[in-house]
Image (cartoon, rainbow, N blue to C red):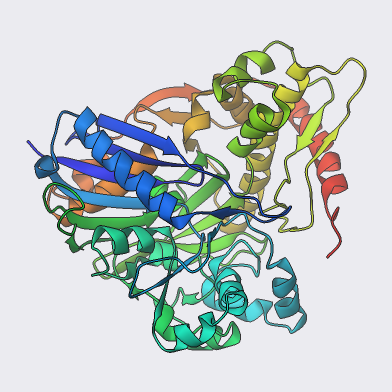
Length: 496
């Protein structure tokens, strides 16, 4: 009996999960790593620590499942997207810390490109807005600020990659420098219509083409782990950015199906079929996956701070000792007491795209308690999701029938019920909540014939709980109105 290993490299931790043929988790391991904040608005990771933590939990997960690497049929990779790494091809050493997707230092460069009238060009080619969220301006910043980097890049001595590329490079000891379209489509450098790197955009951002990885399908055998990485060689056969992997893992494979992932950030994707939908409300058109020669697209809204707000309660304010304590603390009060948190700690994502917004608490009185702040924190996640869904329905012209959810925060019943109440549609939590890792596993398993086809994996998805709306829609509208007022006051706090 063989298994699939999924590497789930996230923003705050590296995880590895072993799945059996029924999609059940046979073994799991997780390790948090450092978050580096050089200055306000700047967020970095040590790329070497990312790799060390990821291979460490891979070995641990296999062992916890009572297996060896010889029992693994294939490896699938899913990853935090947009995070930018540049390394020396000869030594494999990064030339700078990884610049995390949350990093805002290139907001001014994005403003410059907008002032030059280039935003429409980038949107038409990439499906993205011009924002510091994406990899392109981060990569240009590294080349401009690390001495000698640009010359070395032009000479073909450096390699760029998002985290998936970095992991495959290390798993193969430099044999493969690849990415898939779901990750490439998050760089501001990839043309989602032609399916390749865009020469004009590369020139505008002054990115030397020799830096870039080869773009390969999301489900394909790319190579094997190099000798000494694991005890035996294992095929590497699936890659997808974390949110696209979750869309695949949730079996949202038809136009109009929507999933929302509650992680460090919050990410809603709607499957739009075999062509991108152009958003009129600042959502993103992105590649869902490419299998064989078929590319599937999605409409996406990105919330920068969701679960990270709960971490702030824990680490920044000390109101809770563990993230799991937030639900009973929030449930200790009957409502938010008029308190609203706008968690714009790294600016606002879709549909606002305001890099100068900052976090703010509104409605505080002498009667406000830690319970009210905790409840406002959870509710802020649901409010941001509701904002996304509203514009997604407008862009697509498809009313939502249900919302499939995944990610760590879906274990929070109070949050899930409030989400259903705000949206007015059922919120469906699957039996296997590890849908991001499961999506990567499915992609890898399909490539090696572990599963016969998408019809077989489609039969594995099962509902664990459905949250039915219970709030009067008038009350939900009133709460969203107060949220909107708070949101407007948090915008534009920092000066460009």
